[in-house]
Length: 121
Image (cartoon, rainbow, N blue to C red; front, side):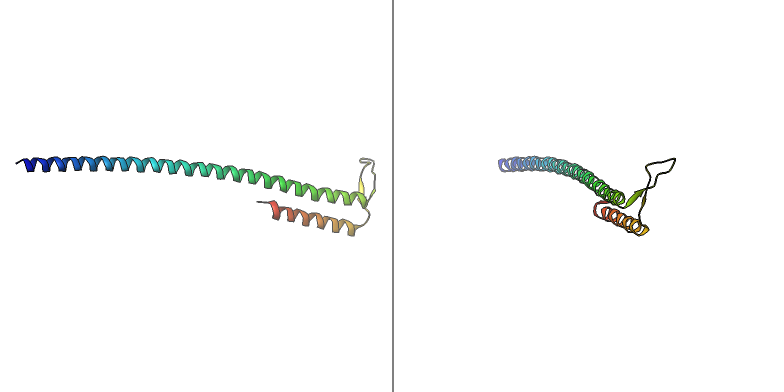
């Protein structure tokens, strides 16, 4: 009779240990899942922040490139134009040759296109 009682005790203890171990594993697994999710969320925030900074740099570089192209155009215009004052606007200038105007305008458009390809979205 005592052998049967010890068998029940041993089975009950083993069952208790199994339940506690399973509960501990389940808790550990849930905690680990939460940590993994928190890490993923942090990585996503970091990536979004990096992308935003990168986008700001690209927009800044695009603006600098476009400004440079426009400045070069205006510099060329200033060198290759003559004053052509009118009553309404005495500071008006005109190109000295239509061919210079056409080639300079084409270069401006090409430079702007390059800027958009290089730094645009």
